[in-house]
Image 1 (cartoon, rainbow, N blue to C red):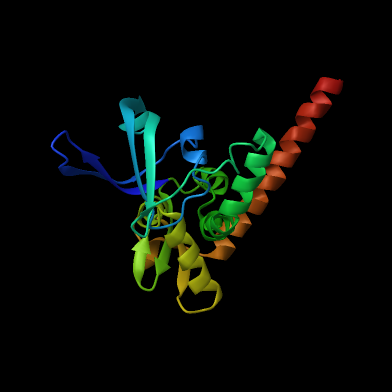
Image 2 (image 1 turned 90 degrees about the horizontal axis):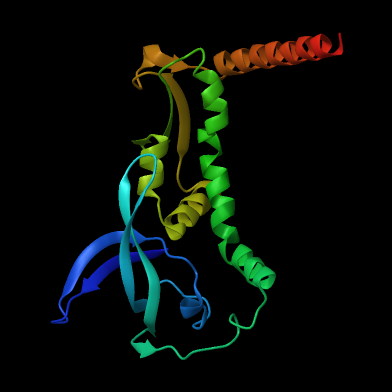
Length: 210
């Protein structure tokens, strides 16, 4: 992911485009080994639209003429990553993003979609909230605020060293006391749901056998 994205026009004037941009890791980028935070990356590319279930957005394809500047100096090309086999590159990527995935999984586990899809059968307006140092977040606003790897890793490190507090609450509707769902409420319903689901599977299996 690239952050602080600008377009440079023919007059060499910079125009702000986006706070971040996801790019495929093509050979044009691999030639420079792994980027570091603060690197200035410049390239030509084709802008195209794509559509998700929520919105239409833009992406940049076919990067070319890539140049990378670090601390004011151009970075030379290297063959280290280019000569790796695909599986070896995957392993390198896993190592590179390990601190981020660890932080992401720990911080976002609370917002588990599968669990809340089940809970919505009983509480139709259920919504998990995280309070990070008195700032209230939904799942979506949390991901938007901590969208970079660095911010997610930093938050996780502050949390595990108890330098920041993260409180988690679940409400059926607006985050007010009367809508608060306790852990006991949730676990009790999930236990009953699991019991009923298991019984339904058994009944269905017996029906097939008969």
